[in-house]
Length: 120
Image 1 (cartoon, rainbow, N blue to C red):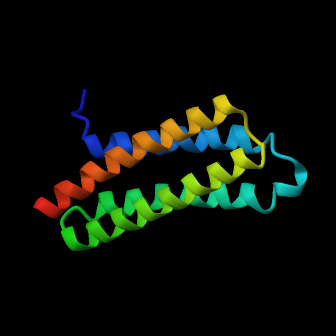
Image 2: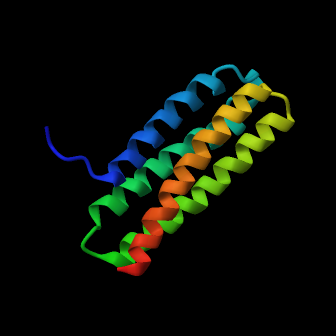
């Protein structure tokens, strides 16, 4: 079995987040499907894309760091969108806690990856 790199775990976590997000946004009211739901999905996909760009630019640390910081910003945007969803009562307390925990876990992983790039 091939050795797993820890950065791929971030990819897997974002993949899980996307699946969880898609399940939840399908329950939003129709009036939000082309507004808040679209923003949430786009934010998730952008994070996934930036993670892959960072992974592929491993030989270019400044570029990799740029992608990771962009991904971190997108994660902050997603946190805000999830908070708005909660305040608008589109999701339950339990959904909010689960979603927030998934986002926080990804944030911690990205933070570690960013620190390792800055120290290199």
